[in-house]
Image 1 (cartoon, one colour):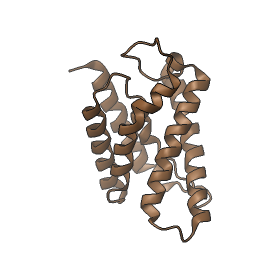
Image 2 (cartoon, helix red, strand yellow):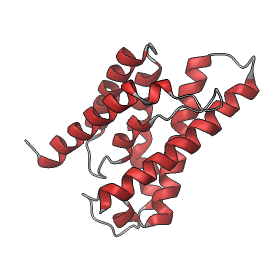
Image 3 (cartoon, rainbow, N blue to C red):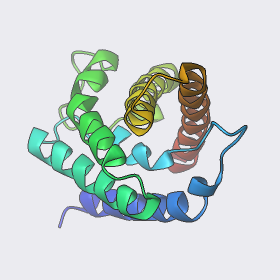
Image 4 (spheres, helix red, strand yellow):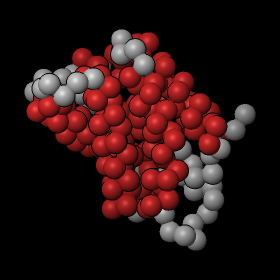
Length: 166
């Protein structure tokens, strides 16, 4: 079995446990919830097959939905993230980069990695909270949830990336 794949599964299992046991119970200002399990999707390498990215996103979202009681919301959102991840990554890579590059602060540089992370997390949070709310009746709280969760998730992902890269 591929070492990179095994490492990715181990990171996801650890982040899933932290999400279910800790982060699902944190609601800062009643709107910001850390959604750190999506960090695994951010780390998909450039050359990952499309079917594997979609299937991985689907399976990750399925397990998060089971433990978080959000039927289908995480599954749809992480599957969509798996779909758009190669295109978003291509925006921040140089044309002459290797095909097997894995996004990190080392490979992209700090500014590009932060922008890539912010864009991906913002798209994820927008889709996640739109599907969770499924109406725009209280659109101000919807925007607060998106902004708060995006901010806290990006900060935690960058922090985790700094520890991972050392």
